Length: 277
Ligand code: NDP
Image (cartoon, rainbow, N blue to C red; front, side, top):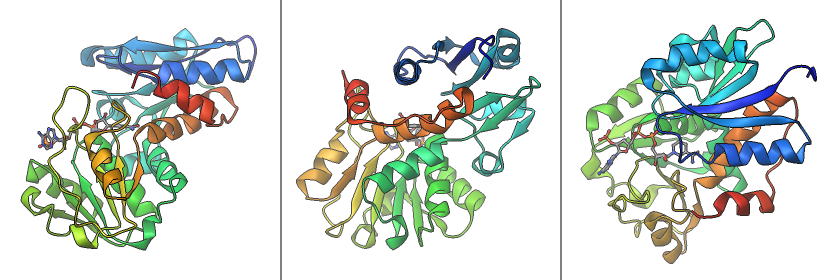
């Protein structure tokens, strides 16, 4: 990368003060001795188009997108990666040399790498996904990509789960929210993609006791790091994967695309990122 170019990236969201991404990317910039900066960018939905178009003018290498911009930003790209089109959302924008904007979704890689790193054999059995928002889309795409044989999705608002099952097709199947306990005894993996269990929110209403020994429980939430769901899973002797891993792994390909170097996730970095969670 030319040294004359300012090495800038950031994360657009509204609100954005809670984001841990600046801490993460600025750590890697220091570690790789890259004289760059990753900024929190508070952008209201109505300013999104203007803000994205300003990236090349301001010399940004790109940015991440978080709530509520992941879907709306797609239409504002010059080009969108095929996987991201399939998911229907982007979380990473890369400014190409000609100033055009390329959108991709690294949440899928983040979700998959986190589970594989935890030792979860995704293709070995059925998975139950709870929630049908933006994060659930990345989860379904990741499970399909890893050849999960049966994928069940349950959501408080059933229509949204049905919509996603239709969007992704086989082997994704929607089940009613009240049916979420009925299939528990055959699950290899349960993923919480709802907001329940986040700091300030009630715990997810679920009983994991029928899960088979050896099953995995993954919570996408990382604040707190150990959610009531993961506490319950640990008490039952099940395998767990927290949400911080997904956050860390989704950032690796984004950093590499902007700054030309592939960063690593070390225990020291995990500790730094977990501080205060
Ligand atoms: P959305 O707002 O798009 O979706 C929220 C989901 O939670 C919906 O399915 C919603 O159901 C469900 N929900 C809300 N309240 C309840 C309730 N009382 N009971 C049951 N279900 C409920 O959020 P996202 O999909 O973007 O994010 C979901 C979670 O994933 C968040 O906690 C987020 O922090 C986390 N996340 C983590 C990432 C990581 O890197 N670790 C990346 C992205 C997200 P309904 O449709 O009925 O409203």
